[in-house]
Structures are given as C-alpha cells and as structure tokens.
Image 1 (cartoon, one colour):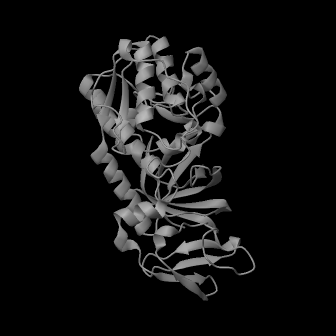
Image 2 (tube, helix red, strand yellow):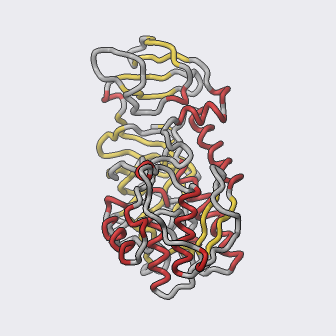
Image 3 (cartoon, rainbow, N blue to C red):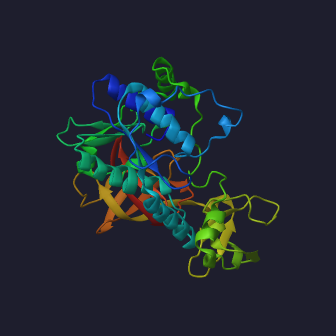
Length: 366
C-alpha cells in the first residue's frame, strides 16, 4: 500500500471479497514514514482530513503523508498494517539509477523497483508471514486458463502497467492479484468514494519518487560526481558543436537543453560511452528499425527460433510489430516493420502477443 488511491482501493476490494488482508508500506528512507513493523490500531486512526493548498503538488510516493493515508485505510477497515524499512535496498536502487546515467544509459528504476522490492523483498515478507497471495494496485491482469499464469495488459490500455511488470518470476505471478485490472481510473476513484476514502481525488504520482523535481542530473552528481567528465557534442555530420559537462545530462531523443542553435531542430541520436561524445542530428537519425537486448526473461518456454510479436521499448511507447530473433543465451535481436523513435540503451523492451506479455529484457543498442 503506497498511500495512493489505486492500492487503497485494491485493498478495499480484497477486503470486501472476504480476503484476510495485511497492508504493507515500503519505508524508503526519504523521510520518516512510520515505525517499521508497527501495526495500525483502528481506534486510534482519524478519518483523513481534507488536504491543504499544497496537496496538488504531490508528485512522488512513499512519503510520510502517504504512509498516514495507507495506515488510515487499513485502520478504517480493521486489518493489520506494517511499514517495512527498505532504506538500504532503495539506496541501492538509486545507485543503479546513477550508475546507468553515468554509463551513458537511461535507467528505468520503476521496473527495477518492481523486480527487486515489490515482487522481491515484499514477496519474501509474504512468505515469512504465511501469506497465500501478493496484491498490488497495478493496472494489469493475470490469467490462469492456459494451465500456467499469464501476465496480461489491463483491460483499459490507457492505464496499462504490464510493461513495468515483465520481470515478475512466473512462480510469483501465479500467486499475484491485480484487483484493478478490469477497471478505469474513473471507476477506481468512484469506488474510493463508495468506500468513503477521502483520498479519492488524490493526485497521481507522476515522477520517479526520489526525483520529484525531475532533476535527474542532480541525483547522479550527488551519487557519482566523478562521472561528470567534459566531452564533445558533435553533429551527425562530424562537426564539433560545443563541449558538454557530462553524458549523465542526456538521453536518446532529447531535444531541449542541448545548448545549440542550428536553425532547425536537432535531437540526441547517440551517446558514446567510450569517448563521452553526445551525437545530435535531425529526427531521422533518432529513428531505428532494430534493437539489441539482453537479460531476457520469458513467462513461457524460451523461444529457439525467430517469431513475430508486438514490441514496446518504453513505458509510453505504443507496441509496434516486429520480428524477434534469439541470438544467444538471454539475448535477442529485434527488427521492427517500421523504424521506431529513440531506441534507448538502459530501457526495458517488452514483447506482447495480443494482450499477453511474453517476456522482456534490457536494451543494449539499436
């Protein structure tokens, strides 16, 4: 339970269905959220008060306010609630974020958080207390009709979060519940009102929780100051345009903040890790018909020959058709039917057959 409307409604639905619910909040160390492993007491928890003028500024998640919101929901329904201290684990996640940017890659900490924490550490906690299932407020579905668990996109694609869930282990997926998988956001908020939750209109978290100001370079500079090494910004035609302060400030497809004016829009088309050069050029140079990826995991049998599927290369990317070819253990080469915008090393690539997630991995190059 993150303290948002989605996980709160998911908990309420499960409680209404008769499940023996235990709420868990991840205390990440940004601020004191709640005492670790301190159960909520229903009689001592007030109804959530109306929010003040700063409530619309909520951008991240897992703050002290979020912990209070989650505890209140648990208290009102009378089920146990625990705040678990994941500060060290989360610090390692931020290190990964900084290391990837320093290595000229663009990280996806939400995918890693799901793999390592929500469906990693929290699963271990569920095992420790004898829980049969793990449930979250993600918009996705699990189907068991094929004799094995299948991860499916949410019924309403505008909220689908299956992309960030591809790394769930099949044995964990088999005991995972997504109560919101068939619902729209408006329906979830309506349910929150029916359940009497004053957080029914709580704004969604829009940014990476540990970078609410979107200044990613600041986080990298704090964690890996040695990575800010000057390098050349070059045009795709070979011209040196200027010197930049470090590759951690750039990502493939970026247009703004380049510090160059050439009379026509240019975008980052490539970042050279070895030389530290940032290559920019017209939009055509950002599109690519191929992807090379590794650390691939599959929900079903590992493919031994080429096959066709729809492929997503970032969270807000519309899955595009292409051919996936295994090229080594845990490695694939993807060729799209049409070139795609900004194939970005460090991002996840996820493969779909209709609504089913077949598997996914991590982009190395185009």
